[in-house]
Amino acid sequence: MLRFPEPYDFDVSTERFRAFGTDLANLWHEGGLHRVVAGREVRIEAAPGGVEVEPLDDEIRAVVLKLLGSEFELPSFYAWAEAQPVLAGIVPRIPGFRPPLAPDPFESLVTSITAQQVSLFAAFAIRNRLIERFGERGELAYGFPSRELIAAASEDEIVALGFSRRKAEYVIGLARADIDLHALAALDDDDVRARLTAIRGLGPWTAEWFLARHLARPRAWPAGDLVLRKAAEVLYGLDVHELGKRLDPFQNLSAHYLLTGMRVT
Image (cartoon, rainbow, N blue to C red):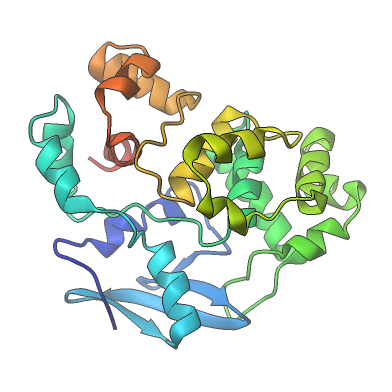
């Protein structure tokens, strides 16, 4: 068992993995989440005080803790949000929501590429075809395709899965790029943005979601996200950039609570 500080709501915290259709790499099945880790299918389900994980060893533990957002410091955010317009109403309605994270940096970036300028329903469907074609199959779920396999693929193979020609170029270009994606975790936010946006196809929106949904950086704020812009306008009557300044130093958690709160409350 892995314990999480109370309150923790496993169902709400994993809602994103089923909100836009099936996610083959993070598969919801009969009340639990399945993910392939190092060739083994892992099932995660709610338990009092945390989650039950089967099987569980040190490698799986690290992946599951990352996946379930253990890096986020929620108590200080909750205390701050009590005095914040809008969030003071949203946060208590989804108590125990802990935003999930992408455990692998390559997976995080490819997922963002698939979501560029399309609906999330379409992005999930296209991403699933990539996972099914190049990923390692477990019993129910699939492991996300390795960077090496995508680097060896042709653009035509990626286009056949529903990617535009340009996005196929971006995905393969990222896989073949001379950059250590894991090493980005040691850099500050601005350096991460600079390194990523130097790669063709990775703009500020993608870099910001990488900071938010892989590195869990507190001040990550994907101002280019259309739904977040709508939330800023409708809920606050503000420009999204101005709202980001007002939500400092909790922009990342604020964005997650706003977006999830708009869907589930």
